[in-house]
Amino acid sequence: MMSGLKKGVLTRTVWALSLISLFTDTASEMLYPVMPLYLRSIGFTVVLIGVLEGVAEATAGLSKGYFGKRSDLMGKRAPFVQLGYGLSAISKPMLALFAAPLWVFFSRTVDRLGKGIRTGARDAMLNDVSTPATKGTVFGFHRGMDTLGAAIGPALALVFLYFHPGDYLPLFFIAFIPGVIAIALSFTLRDNAHAPKKSVQPGGFFSFLGYWKQAPKAYRQLVIGLLFFALFNSSDMFLLLQAKQVGLSDTAAIGAYIFYNLVYALAAFPLGVLADRIGLKRIFIFGLALFAAVYFGMANLPKEAGSNDLYLYGFFFLLYGLYAAATEGISKAWITNVVKREDSATAIGFQAGMQSLCALVASSLTGVLWYTFGGPVAFTATAIATLIVLAWFIFAVPAPVVEAVEAKG
Image 1 (cartoon, rainbow, N blue to C red):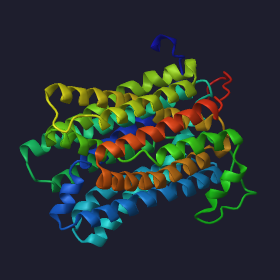
Image 2 (cartoon, rainbow, N blue to C red):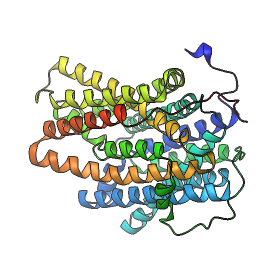
Image 3 (cartoon, one colour):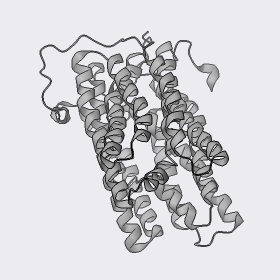
Image 4 (tube, helix red, strand yellow):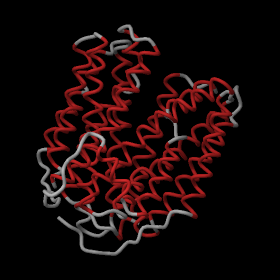
């Protein structure tokens, strides 16, 4: 499959952005398994942790659309990428400096604001240096590198905590190191965007919502499906919770999460290459089918799992990694193939922002279903909703039209 990869598809910009994402995700995911434990150790209740994450994710979600539009209006990508990754890097040691709740809220919000600032501009920059015929490859490679960091980070945290059990504070300073590397790499980026839109006024914070009315029909059809899916695609924490309930230890559950990220990282690039050959829509639909299969399977795991059932759970995590590899980068590549290049950051920011807000609803809905009816009902409901989304993509969303053109810079 790789032998047919054209020279120049993975440009210097693609490599730089991919390495930046790898180091940033290494830093972020190093703290992911220990964040709830650290917050509890400094006096945060479960409710306060939930409020903290809700505020942080809402900040990231809404700012993705606003800063995506700003990037398009200014015709610049690199400054947004640099500032966004810079804020995320400095937020790591900030969390450890003071234990006051307001400071923790501020530090966590700075981290998510950084994500909001960079997301649209970064993905638009990938779009700027690729062609319609190579976007699956480019976005797949980037997502693979990004997710490799998501596997390395928790592994490093596990090794550190093995030798220093319960000593969470140093991890926040250690996580600053890959963050600094990411900042340094961001200054190697060069813009290849478009001229600023001088005739268009920036508007207010929510002005990016107006893009929906002027967006192409193909974009609206695609995003309707993506957002409906996001309304039922709850946090991965529920999968880990199910793992605990069927008998996995804490270490095994975190190990399963690392395994999922490794599968995702290794599969994203080849599936992106395959998507450029057989079509983005086909690979994306394949990913949704895997997701439905995983949730139906998880809903039917026995309450007391034996050794064979635990292997089955590992198989489900393998499929879940393949699902992510077949959908995350592919959806972004698909979006950029149905909108104008000068609107790509706005289009991606709008979708990513709305998806973040839908994810909050999804996790809340799943939590209510789980609490009221149990985990199997919650997982079954998600799987059935996914089948509806699958039908929407098969029958209502046209495949993007791809024309082979020469790659840019």
